[in-house]
Image (cartoon, rainbow, N blue to C red; front, side, top):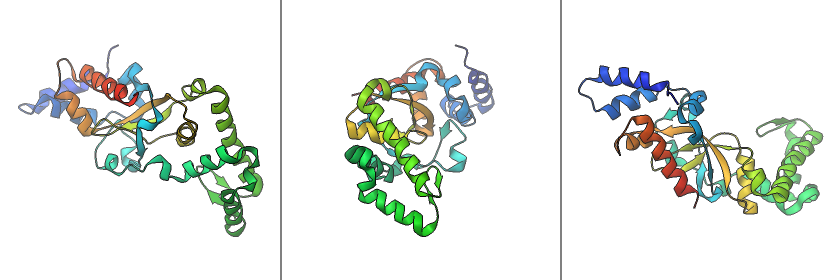
Length: 229
């Protein structure tokens, strides 16, 4: 596969003069948009990992979301999935199933909806009918994982980033799927790599032989192998 970013890296390295090539290359990679992740990473963009290996959930901010390579401390502030509202919601659905209206969580949400006139999650709900439809859609996800197991878990990848230390963190779509897989003990799940920490890329550049592209792909595969255990 011809990596279109190689031309950018070559120009950056030439312009850098005495700068180490990994510094120049990583600087160029910073401007690869997130939408080009699969073009850059190829087959390595989608991996199968254990859901328990996903360290937590992060927010990259509006600017960070634009690029494949993201700097900053976002990877140090990962919130464990078990501490999220999404996990609590899926935990309730696993426990109550079609009887979710009996749960305290549902009743709290219905009361809040009545008092405020709306609830915002990943969607905005204005009525109990909206709330019930939302619960039913998430319940179908639980039931599908219960019935199909791994086949369902790998069919729709969860969006992730790789932090500076090679750990996977969720940052894109799929928080309900991840929580359900954790609760039901379904593994592996498939993940789609959407972001890489700048220091992870720099670490790849400093190790082994070959182009930055080849070294980066090897580094990603090593991280995925560790996360599959």
